[in-house]
Length: 314
Ligand SMILES: Cc1cc2nc3c(=O)[nH]c(=O)nc-3n(C[C@H](O)[C@H](O)[C@H](O)COP(=O)(O)OP(=O)(O)OC[C@H]3O[C@@H](n4cnc5c(N)ncnc54)[C@H](O)[C@@H]3O)c2cc1C
Image (cartoon, rainbow, N blue to C red; front, side):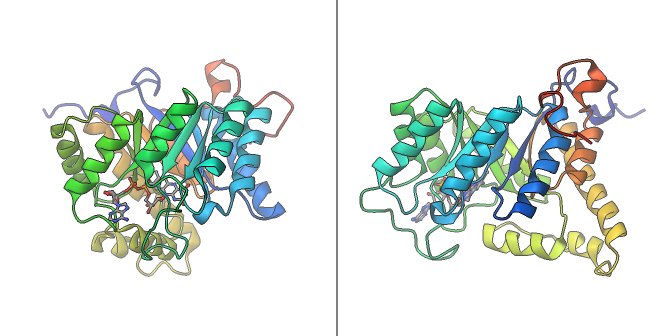
C-alpha cells in the first residue's frame, strides 16, 4: 500500500498548519469596488493569514491602495498588508506613505521595487531622490517602523535579472534588510518552485517562500500576465483550456481542477502557506481553500472576521 498523501489527511486546515493569504487590487470604479467587497466578504470568514492590496504601476493607485487598506482595517477584522513600490517617488514621499500606514494601524507592508513607469520591459531607473531597489526600500521601512515586511521571489527568474543566482542575491539582500517572508510570482509547474526553493535554502535564506497561486479565471489573460512576468505557460495548461472559449461553465470547472491539482501537490510536498492572486474574485479561490480544509469561521464557532451586521457574507 502506498503512503497516505498529506493532502488527503482529514481534519481542519488549522490542525494541519495550512494558511492562506489573499491578494486584491484597489478598485477603479464603483462597480469594481462592489465586486471587491463582495469577494472580501466571501473570503474573510476563511480567516486568512493576511490580505494584501497591490500598488499600481508607478504609484498610480497610491490613494486607492491606501483607501482600500484603511477600509479593510475599519470594517473587517482582517490583517491588511499594503504593497508599496519605489517607482517615481522620492524617499520623502515613500516615507510619508509608510508613516501614514503605520499611523493608520497597518502592521504589514509588501515591499517591491515596482515596474518601470514605461511598463514591463522598459528599463528601470530609480528616481534620483528615491529608493533604488526593493532591498533599499525594506531597509527604509525598517528604519522608520517595526512593521512586518514581505517581499517578492521569482521561481522562474525576474525578467530583468541575468540569472536565478542574481535573483537569489537580491532576495538575500532583502532578507538582510529585514524582510521576513517572500511571496512568489505565480507559476504553473510546481517542479520550478521546488527547484528554486532548493537553491534559496542552499544559499542560506531561511524565511518562508510562500507560493503565489493564480487560479486561471481567464486563460488568455493569464497567458498575457505570464508573458509579462516571465512565467512559463506549459502546453498541457493551454490544452486543458483549448476549445472552451465559448463555454464559461466548463472553463470554471477546469480552472478549479487545475488549481486543485497544483495546490494539493504542493501540500503533498510539505507546503503549508499559500498566497492567492484573487483578481478580486472569490469563487475559485474559495473552492480551492475549501479543498485545503479551510472553513468559514462560523462553522468553527469562532468570531467572524467581519463585524456582524456590517456586511452580507454570502
Ligand atoms: C508577490 C508580488 C507582488 C507584487 N505586487 C506589485 C504591486 O503591488 N505593484 C507593482 O507595481 N508591482 C508588483 N509586483 C511586480 C514587481 O514590482 C515587479 O516584478 C518589479 O519589476 C520588480 O520588483 P521586485 O521588488 O519584485 O524586484 P526585486 O526583488 O527588486 O528584483 C527582482 C530581480 O530583478 C533584478 N533586477 C531588478 N532591477 C534590475 C535592473 N535594473 N537591472 C537588472 N536586474 C534587475 C534583481 O536583481 C532581482 O534579481 C509584484 C510582484 C510579486 C511577485
